[in-house]
Length: 302
Image (cartoon, rainbow, N blue to C red; front, side, top):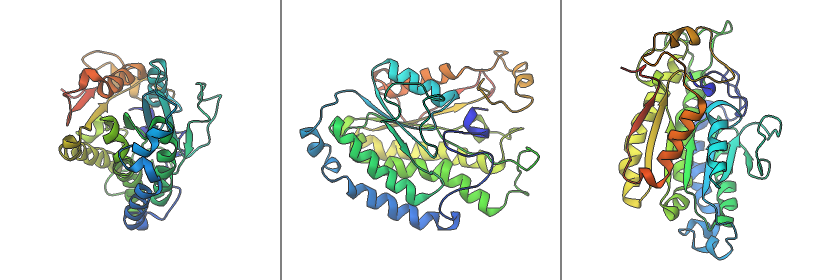
């Protein structure tokens, strides 16, 4: 699995459903927060017109959740190497030791994705910062995710997962992506931007390490990607997903390397290979690609 499936230090989750607004309140709070955020950024909400007057940063812009290691880390480096401005979002404060890239601290926004109201606050802050780019957002990558485990580190199945965990997982893995996409819609539309949702091979089959709530949330995110592609497409915003399989990151579940022996390509994937696909989907080379979910798993899905 990719790193954020088990442990995402930049997002601050360690296999629990900790943090933020009580999950039961997430639905109403999330709707209100997202709608409020759409009005807080003032001129940037008007297709970027107000922001364009004060724009002094001509770089393309990326907003990325989950960035400190693995796929997220590789994605920041890939886009930065191409001259993009990368705004990272996570629960943890920025660490130059963990994330040694230029302007990282200035372009980092602290947000607890498990807290719907905090997501709304972060959206308003992102929109404010994007005024420097003329109120334009060229890419949104929803990478952060959590997969709580049992106290012994075992996956939680459908009989064991309590409702608090279900709600927390869906808030981070499913609701936060659509909140961000809707809250940043005007900026994405102004740039004819792209959205990439990071799903998982676990969304299409029972996985030995990923819990039921995680797998179900990723399956839902894949379905949401298709719906978003249909809804955002007329506004020249493309929406796609990538479904990583077993990726060699700093943290691997026991047995992952053994699984690689049975994959058609007989190896684990590299974070850079996933980041390259994300970059492709956000660029001009994929200008006619929307509503797709690309499997990046060495043939594991066949």
